Length: 244
Image (cartoon, rainbow, N blue to C red; front, side, top):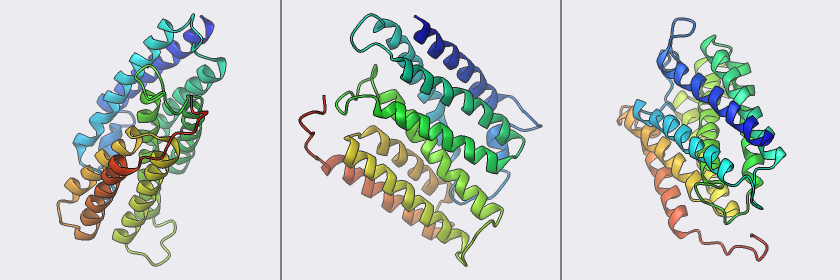
């Protein structure tokens, strides 16, 4: 019961903070208003961010499923509860850091969230791609991972931290390629089609946002989306015998 309460309270706090970030101005702007006040080629079309409310709904079902499973062999462990709670709390911290334009600290917060969600993701068997298993965690992890790549692009390109002589367009392509490579690795090694599907959603949004005004970025985003679609369909690595 205590483990479930930890998860439930963390989720309620996460849900309230996330909706507030979307709808209410903090430091005189919402999260998206701040993001789109800068011209960053990697930022996707606005429709893409509807994924985050969808991910929250999936997590709400995941929390409910933990209550249903509380007396079974697959009940929530203390490690899983703590990892979820830490990722939720740090996400709330990230919201405040982002609104107050502490972008380097915001990136560090996203890294912590990504690590926690990845470890939580790994606590599930490879075959448990179900709504009451690792699927909601996979989608949340993918969304945070792509958000991390966007923040890296934001720092490198907008603030000219390090450019190595590359143009904004090339930096966008490099970071999008790294994101797609991560999605393919998760698909191949962890037998997960949901994770790269989230990245396809984001990549198509990047192509739509640029609308061929930035031909290189749009073409790269569409090409990488195609690569991930092929990966989802044709990567059929056999599950190890101990996957369950």
